[in-house]
Length: 94
Image 1 (cartoon, rainbow, N blue to C red):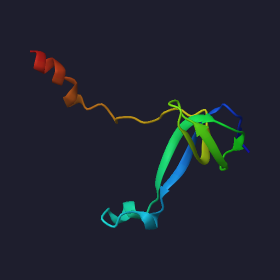
Image 2: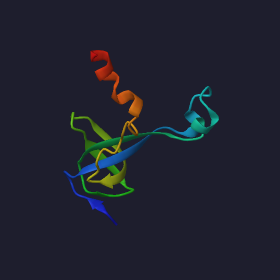
Image 3: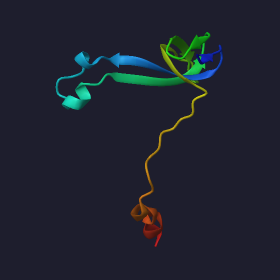
Image 4: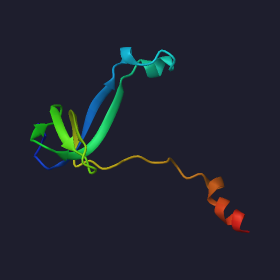
């Protein structure tokens, strides 16, 4: 079992709304899934993946949730490059 030690950089997941708590006006497929918060921070105590863990974020917030991963990187992206958008700045200058 993978375990984080106090002070490690980790990611936790916190349940914000269960499916039955979601707003009735949102699409059915969205309403059928829980609303989750994923947060990176420094773990405040030893814990194994899948266990409850508390973290302190870079800005000092303390939050608790299920430990999901260790030494995590931010993996978000704005998608693939759109060739038509590459020349926008140079066309405006011309």
